[in-house]
Every structure is written in C-alpha cells, then in structure tokens.
Image (cartoon, rainbow, N blue to C red):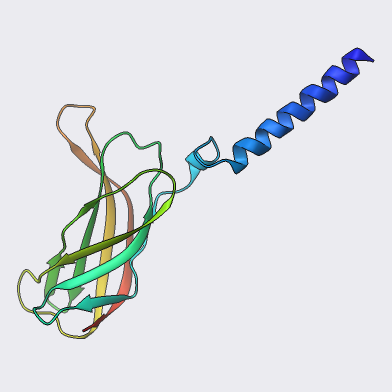
Length: 144
C-alpha cells in the first residue's frame, strides 16, 4: 500500500511539475517559442522624406550573442536602410520602430514594401559573425 501511495504521489508531483513548467514564462517550454518579426502594413512618411516603419518581434532567451533588428523600406527604385535597434531576447513580444531616409530618390505616399530581419552576432570565434535568425516582409502604405 505504501508503494502504491508513493507511486501515486510521484506521478502527481511529476504531472504538477510538468504543468508548472508549461505555464511559467522563461521555463523549458517557453524556450521553444519561435523567433518572429513582423512589419506593420502602414508606415509614416514625413514631409522631409524620412520614413518610419513599425512592427513587433519575439526573440528567444536562449540567444547568447547580441541580436540586432535591421529594417528597410523599398518603393520603385527608392530604398532606405533605417536605423537599427538592439533586440531584447526574453521570449516576450516587443514593438520596434525604425526611421531613415532614402539612399537615393524620394519616397512618395502610396504603395511600398517593408522588410525586417533579426540578426544574431556570433561572438564565439572572436570576430562578430552575423547570422540571420528570422526575416519578415510586408506590403506597405506610406502615409503622411
């Protein structure tokens, strides 16, 4: 009878631990949350030509190196590589905002394309080696 009780208790404790692990942020199950990045479908176009894109990202807490977010806007032959940002890798969804000016030409209100990437810098070999973690793109509407 004591062995049956121990078995039942052990099974209950194992099940409780598994449930607690699955429901607690930052635990084993949360470590497998996918890295994601999105680009919102509307971007701001300032009168001076600067374009501002927004979106969201989630970065795994298992990442060991710094993770950067790079964003660009494209419209016809015009392109802007916007200022990047450093990602917070804590398994939570965060917002990002990035602005820049056209490298050549000028943006106009209307249809465009936005692209965003999360890049981890691998520092294990001395020099930082970039590795693209995830990539997102979206059709945009540029609005003033």
